[in-house]
Length: 93
Image (cartoon, rainbow, N blue to C red; front, side):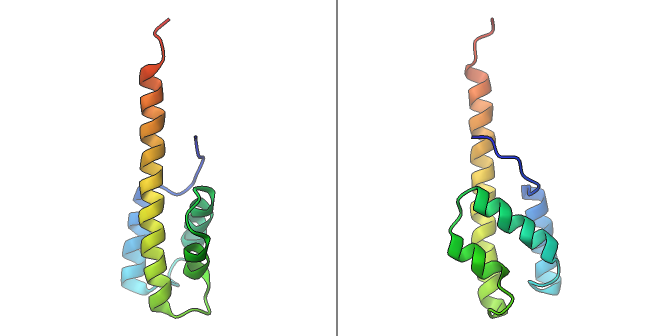
C-alpha cells in the first residue's frame, strides 16, 4: 500500500505547536489536510469529523486531533516500513 499524501510527521509536529500556542482554529488548512490524509488511511471517521467540526467544543476537537494525529503518524510509519521491507526483499537480478 502506497499513499501519496501532503501530511508528514514533521507537519503534524508543526501543527501540534500551532494548536498548542493558538488553539485548534489556528491553521484550518493544515487541519483539513490532516483530515483528508486520515480518511485515506482509514482512521475512525467519527474522530476525523469531530476534529474539523467548528460547532463542537474546542476541548473535544483538540482531543480528537490528538488521537487522529497519533493514528496518522503511526500508519504513515507502517507504510514507510512496508515499502522499505518490500524493497529489501526484491531479487538483485
